[in-house]
Image (cartoon, rainbow, N blue to C red; front, side, top):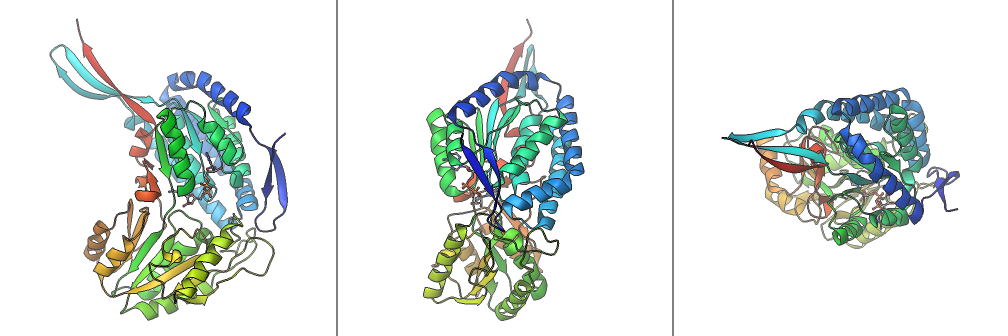
Length: 457
Ligand code: NAD
């Protein structure tokens, strides 16, 4: 039997061992989903809505248990685990309200005896391959609209968020989603690869650029529709006219929430020279105030990194930055306690020649660079292979819009950052991904149009 060990990143203890799916088990699960999907899609959409509403009620009733599970395996501070589960409720409400009208048949034209209309059919059996950093969000962005529009979902939670994934599966089944319509497959990369060897009607992936490339290659072999939500190196620009303290508080939270392990975390900050020093002082004082500790403690803001190996990535980025002339103002090393802890780290004098400003850090470190104009900020913000989000802090909305129109990113923030709304499309450009989730477009993404030409005899 192939067992997956689940580790607590705050203590490095193994907390559970779970049986992983091998190739044969994955193939059998996909076959069961294939057999069950049509009946699910033929049910009235109102029935599917009621079932998913019941799932939402169950999540709300079970919030404390779910939060504790996630904190134990992902290391996310308990208040942030609860926050994510509350955010899931908003997503559920959005999809329950919006799906029915979004996928309704669209009459196009009637000319004489001929009528044309568009019908939105479900894709069929789709794979939902997920990351661990927001295990509720990145999975539900896919499985909620997929199930509501009549698809069967093969769900592979990240191996680092397996228990959360299994808990979500149990609640979906308890709410009435048939066990063969939402099917968890358990394991790491090899389980994911075994899933991609099956015939699927869509692959919806959240994870790193490196894995995203492998997913795209595997999907190309069978011409399977694929969506990729990948990493980022998201910039924030602090213009000359800001309230420095408010901008420092906002960007520090955007950089360090969830220990910086957000796809849309602020990963680099460009500050206008006229406010640079005051901003850096205010930013460092915010960071010094962060409570580092046991993620199960209510007061903890920075917990361990989920993936211990990421600490070596951070160390290498800081070594490279120091060797190229940057200054570490606070942090810069592991925290002296068991578990995957790294001190929140602020680096000034950063440049785009440094790995810290080019490669995704996905941890509690941030580089700050000084700029002398909005144009220079735009140039440096665009000097990246990624394109997920970008933020501008200024009192002047027109100035923010001018800058953000020039930046090639899927999401633009004025005086805010690290924020996702179910009402807006979530999409990355360049190495940040292909396709989108959320919004009405993230509902239609789980359907294929059928073009009807109807001629009365
Ligand atoms: P990862 O790429 O290591 O793993 C993601 C998933 O892919 C996991 O379930 C993993 O088991 C699976 N996988 C690995 N190899 C595979 C293969 N060969 N075939 C099929 N599946 C395979 O990423 P991660 O560490 O879980 O997540 C962190 C990354 O996700 C970061 O880059 C982050 O920015 C990104 N992310 C992006 C978004 C977004 O919305 N754009 C959201 C959250 C996270």
